[in-house]
Image 1 (cartoon, rainbow, N blue to C red):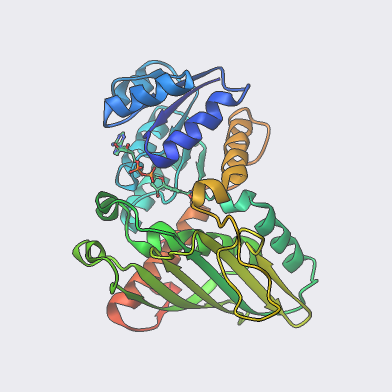
Image 2 (cartoon, helix red, strand yellow):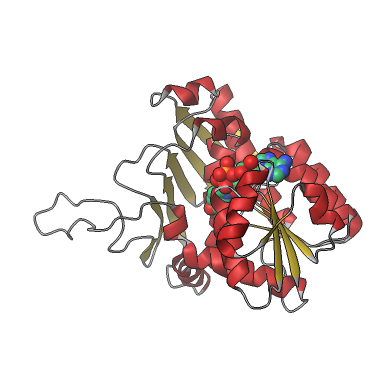
Length: 334
Ligand SMILES: NC(=O)c1ccc[n+]([C@@H]2O[C@H](COP(=O)([O-])OP(=O)(O)OC[C@H]3O[C@@H](n4cnc5c(N)ncnc54)[C@H](O)[C@@H]3O)[C@@H](O)[C@H]2O)c1
């Protein structure tokens, strides 16, 4: 199988190395808007560099992996769909809902595969939490706490192309919330703070966000995110029901320090970032994509699933800007 990968930045570099190692991928072609970056990566991992995106489509690939900046996703998804090619695309599908719906329509018209990179669906902890909810072990859920804390802000140039903290970061928590609980969000109230580094204010974004979400069975959810968590990369989900409570992401690398005399010791090697914390999950989602392309498994996260997560992010953004509760029916595309 020959795969074309578009975008050789932080996540593209990681995904390319996984694909290059995977025996089912006979040949990997990488490209980037910055051709030197693509050549440097290709040389490092033994792939082929293509000078532009055009060659990815004209050199004859069997599938496309899109790891370019979010602002480029919609157009590239449409192009791959029109070429009849299956696509793995990093989240989110596009920067906004109209772009997302246009890309989805192209994929559905072409009848091609679109798998989104919500890698938490392949994480052992989230998978076990899903089983705990669905088996009834927790009893009726009453509270879920979801959080994503990045250790440091991304480069300033990333922000205007990212879609903002809800669409770029909390969208992971929204996707996994639906996946773990099997429920839909009915309403949200969200707020945010730009009291940290000035680049967030300048980009019209926030560095820290919090949302309260209500699920269709009455479960209450808090979701928080920050780009400024000096202790390390901290992604957790706590689910409490009438019978029991489970926590995802609590282990000897969780970057928290207990203030209790008999509390657990602080992590000696806290998670430094998403690439370390989710390495096995990133690898598993790409192996799954290759299996999907080979027709050997169902798509584990299609475009409609990604649309649901983005709609929740849109509702939060609206709630933050207008300082009010937003019901999901207000958001198009449902
Ligand atoms: N699933 C995850 O946990 C996760 C983690 C990080 C990033 N992401 C997603 O991956 C995408 C890339 O993020 P990143 O952190 O690697 O960003 P990055 O800025 O490090 O890399 C993006 C790359 O895309 C290239 N690029 C931009 N427009 C292009 C175009 N039209 N054609 C070809 N190349 C283009 C840039 O030159 C750059 O090299 C984003 O959509 C982001 O949301 C997902």
